[in-house]
Image (cartoon, rainbow, N blue to C red; front, side, top):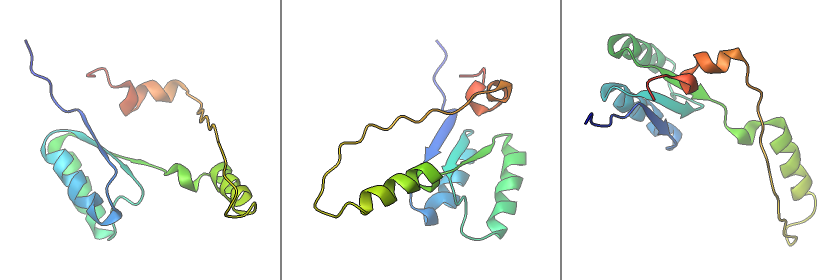
Length: 111
């Protein structure tokens, strides 16, 4: 029986730890999935790019949904109602999928 290996590492740590955790993911042979910002210092991007080449693994950057215009509008609407009011919100996030999706890290046939 083949032992399981880590293919992806999702990084959800404080911003100042992103760089170290991305490097860790690449060193163990996994792709990294990290929210923005990837690094705090631009020169760290060059090192991560070199590590991608050396390891053959990839760093994937995602946008935080809290920066999405619809989420910002929802927050503003709630904030305008006052602090004493409670809300029960059912939020569904749907994103389009094109042919590109199956060529991305999500369509990885290794998984």
